[in-house]
Each structure stands twice: as C-alpha cells, then as structure tokens.
Length: 355
Ligand code: SF4
Image 1 (cartoon, rainbow, N blue to C red):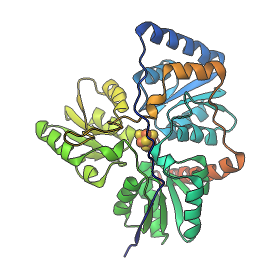
Image 2: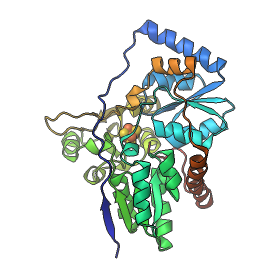
Image 3: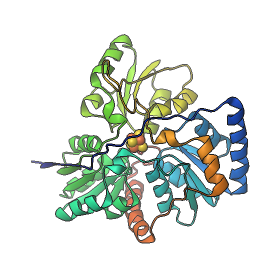
Image 4: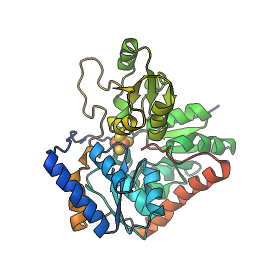
C-alpha cells in the first residue's frame, strides 16, 4: 500500500511574455560573424539547448559547440578544452555546467532566463520541507537550482527517474520528489513508490490540452503523438511516445509515420526538421478551444537568449554564473550518484534528460 502526499509549491505568477529576437538579415550575419570571432578570441564554446532559436542552434553547430539537453550540455562542456562555456538556455543549465566544470568560466546571454520549475522550489522552503521528512530519500529533477540539488540525495533526469526510484523503492525507501508534479506523478505510477510530490510545473508543458490533441488527431489520424513527461497525465495518456527532448527527436527520425503531433516546446522543431526533413510536424494545442495562452508552446525564458545578448556577454564577460563552493560540492554529489547508477546499471542518461 503506497502513501501519496501533495505539497504546495511557491506559485510562479510573474511569467514574462514570449519576446522573440527580431533581426534583419544584415544584422544577423554581422552578429554571427562577430560572435564567431569572439568565441575564438575568448577560448569559448557555445552550448545551446534544443528550445533556443534556430540561429543559436545553427551557430553552436557551426562553431563546434553542441545543441542538446541540459546535462549533455554540461558534459560536452566538460570534455571540451575551451576555458569558457557560453550556455544558451536557462539559469539552472548554467549552474549545472558550473557545478560540473568549476575550473571553467560559465557565461549566459541573459541571467533573467529562469524556469518555472526552478522558481517554484526556493531552496529555503525546500530545505524546511525536507527537514520535516527526514526519513525520506530526496530525489530532485534536473530543473532545480544548485542549492536545491545540494539538499538532494539524488538528482535525476527524466529517463533515469523511473529506474532510480524503482531501485530506491525496492530498498524500502520512501521518496520526497521535487519539483515537477506531473513528472513525479508519472514516476510514481510507473514504480508504485511512496512519493511526496512538490507541486511545481512547467508553464509550457502543463498547458497542453488533451481535448485539443484529440481534435488534431481526428484531422490527422496518421499522426503519432509525442509527449514530454512534464505534461499532464491526460496528455501523457494520449502519447505514442513519452520521452525527453532527445527521445522525441529520435522518434521523429526513426518512426515510420509521416506526421507528428508534438507536445513540447516548439523550439525543438528546428532540430526535428534537420533530422527528419519532409515530415509534417504539428504543435500540440496548448490553449484549449478559443482560449489564449501565455507560453503557447514556447518557453518565455528560453526566448530571452538571442544573438545580441550572446554577443554582449562575450564582448564584456557579463552574466557569469557563480556557484558557492560549499553548495557546489554538495550538489555535485547528487549528480554523481545518478551518473554512477547509470554506469553501474547501464541505464542511459545521455540525451534523455528533461530539459
Ligand atoms: S520549458 Fe518549462 S521546464 Fe523548460 S526551462 Fe522553460 S519553464 Fe522550465
């Protein structure tokens, strides 16, 4: 018999509007040329997330950087010889890069690029909650601050969350999970573990609507439905594939269907078009019939990354990510525990993290 608890998270009310960078062709070309010069001059490498703009993703590839999820961005940066890592993504990604690469300078285009999951889970509130449940093993998702990772026993990515929790459940451990309630619910159902769920959510994924997907599926019965597990359970229930960013990209590439309904940030379409040209990609409805939405299948914080802000960070050295060393050494333990588990069990971590 499992026990389930629901915990209230810090509400995230001040979600900014999505503002995409607009550039003329000449300015775009000039910025790209200048950034390439600066990357060489600063001994820097660009790590871009799948949800950033096509310009940034293209630039990362053209300059031998990487386009990936947060953990792989940090691991790629670790393997690179460059002394500076430019992380185009959101703040927890910059922090993860710094946690795993303390000897390197980590810069970001915009330090205001946050994440609603991270914001929903302030370190002090979380520490207090953990202290109320000392008997529980603390497992946190990658989308958390360095301080929250430091308080955790384990950090997990979405693909390894189920094997890790199943492993802990088999040992008779009870779990305190944070911050994403939908992913936590998905893991709890898959493992049967006794889990307390922090009630954070992603402002992009929680808005996908099952009704809208069913409507779209009626129009395109040939389509496969691809869903990121930060989505609500009723949306996950409609999925042909539930997976993280890289798993969903691989599904578009590998599955025979000509059409896909995609329930994740639409920034991912740039990579999907590259790996599967000619396939029809449809955005899963995010606002319901006739409704408006704030994030509309695109993360407002990811949209803060642009060529102008990237160039400025490289020119000036602005927006450096710093992590207190005591926090870093604690945080690296929760990440290392996951990596050791993956190495021991053969469960893949690479390319399967949530964000
Ligand atoms: S898409 Fe959602 S989970 Fe990803 S950074 Fe934005 S708010 Fe966070």
